[in-house]
Length: 247
Image 1: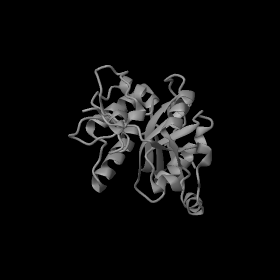
Image 2: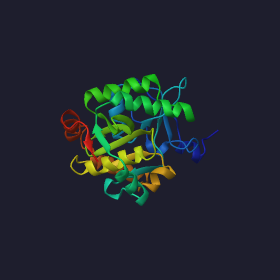
Image 3: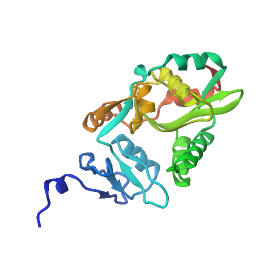
Image 4: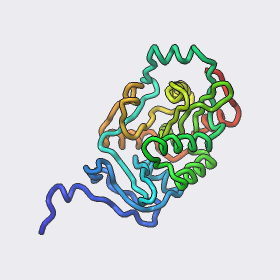
């Protein structure tokens, strides 16, 4: 029996051993929306390569590794971050500090733990190990927010070229993750970061200025902003020299 047009269009690819195996994003499934490939590994080479093509891993143990490429991508232009009046008041109310790459392992731990309490986490031991390795290689970064010398919020992600791929954020006190994102957007210009990938939309992200763009536009943007998988030297330098700074 011949395949229908819909069956020809969508396919779930089983990745080979090659870290450069590249599924066709346009053939990602509609249900679940954006699922494109299965298998492979979480090696640094594969992660960086597939990030540069717009894919990201998202799965829960004991499932195999699942790779996603949504038809509508949620992104944030750092210059378009929306700081509400209530957030401005929250920033002025306390003596917040921020830092870059000062406690990556604690940030990823908090992101994992908070999700495990709420809806179950996809930030497994393997994910932690993979992104911690990227951090040690200079590609993954953490943004930390401190209050009274306690880590209270932040996020982590991957920086390549002029892109930052956000992975997960957390707040132990109200507004901490928002302040982290606002601070990072202010750092973005001097860090040559032109776009933040937020992956999947949420009301929270949209309220902060994020928007949705079609997959095709997102892929075209990646080609422009990641001419090579170079590290972001400014973020590395801030992490090595700046320490905690007032907001």
